[in-house]
Length: 239
Image (cartoon, rainbow, N blue to C red):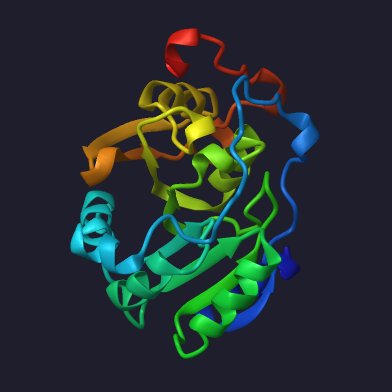
């Protein structure tokens, strides 16, 4: 318990730019069933040019849809090049925190350089099935154009729930397309999130055929046991 408390104070008290896991490991990947669908490869740290995304108003739409306000702790899961991280930092302000999590070493190294002057940002090295975030520390988490790349979505969702505070919300931005074309059909997303104990609370179409789906994370004691989770096998969810 003392180790967890020390790690949590590190996240909430000040910057920590040396990428590394900030919490003890959660449930192992092999405890969960594999998704019954293709998993796309990680191909780039960014989805599209930042100027184009700003012109489309992507960040503002997502931040409003998520209800992100000053003082909150927000985790960017799969932060990539840091597009959301550098925009979340001023939005949550000096009383808030941004946890910039990724699993790719070169992306993390570039992130550390980009956010070195942002005192409320912490870079976190996670694992494909476990974001390795401190327990009960996160008000909101976003997963932007990367859900289709998660090799073990049930494990990641299960372990992410431990990091969420009561009432914590998780927002997933993705293209309305099949995983092999770097998207996730909303029906498939809803099925997998429900299987992991999450409850949908909002859905917002975005420009360019994308969407933001918002879910309430289950309390840790309400998460389904790994062995009780069943992959979504309904072909209709995969179009």
